[in-house]
Length: 229
Length: 229
Image 1 (cartoon, rainbow over the protein chains, first blue to last red):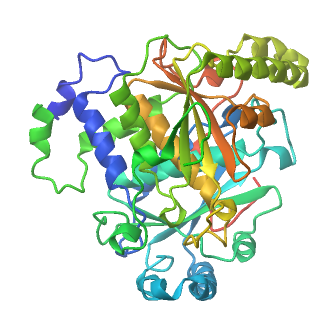
Image 2: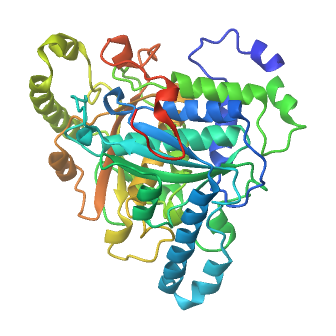
């Protein structure tokens, strides 16, 4: 690979202009995918993706995330049925003038995607064999937050591998806990669908559908402290 | 740049082997930094980093994150004083045989780093002008989770720019809210220190210090449902 030869002079900790641009292209073309082809993700690709998740930072290096791969049809069917129920309730909450757009949106790929992945958090403070975790007690949700950081690593690693990820939140959370047999000290963070996408949408799907616009960066930036906009 | 010429044949949505390897190098060399040089982050670099955060996925495309840059010395001094108090309390919770290692750890760079960044979440359900957010109500913490995804984008973008990030959780959370003047509908997710690092540690600092080992990937992976290990 000629590109690698180009890197030899740079210290290992530096990234070239091309690598930076490539990373920003990755960030900019990552999508929440709902349209999947059925083909399987090779085991070595999945391992690289999960390894990226596992390389996320975590409070006190606690590594509290657990990755549960879900393939069984009966489980996925039950989760899909739950989605249908929740989605019907959600539709009733949408303003009338937006109902048609809402109905046109595909909001999950639970059965189409070759793989579902539940990312859960073994709560630091609730573990049967609990021990002191550096940095945790003043901000006790940091274990959940660390697990989210792993989710984003997974999402980006999948993207660089050409694999799409979709986060399904429209599901009965209690049922999901039951199906995944989560004990009290484990909390669900993200229920994800993974697979090769029909396409990576040009823009976020909710933008393309005219559901919600992107806010300009300066509207989310503040200086020194909160001020009402 | 010769590398770019190499990419022209690939569809825009694909990444080359080199780009994939580069991304994994990024994931693998990102660190939680506590030792900063004092030099400022150029405005255009900071903008790219924040833009990466703002490109994170969010529940219903709600984009609930807000980025508060903190530079004022008096604010940072007050936060640092808070860290010192919290850290003294934490030290007492550490087992005696680990106390020395704990004391040797540098756990923040609040005053050394040229920039502090508070990443906060404008809670979807508590906003004064609240509106229906797609996918939110069945899993109401997804707005906080979305904000965490933005944090990881920021962390990785900083890394590719050669900028270090350190997450400080050992602070009195109520005091931080006061100093940042956060209203009730805004929650703090991450208080970060940003700047050029003295070095990117070879491994996570807590591994180097012998505080906590990395767990093998297979210990965090499960199939189909939770099982006790």
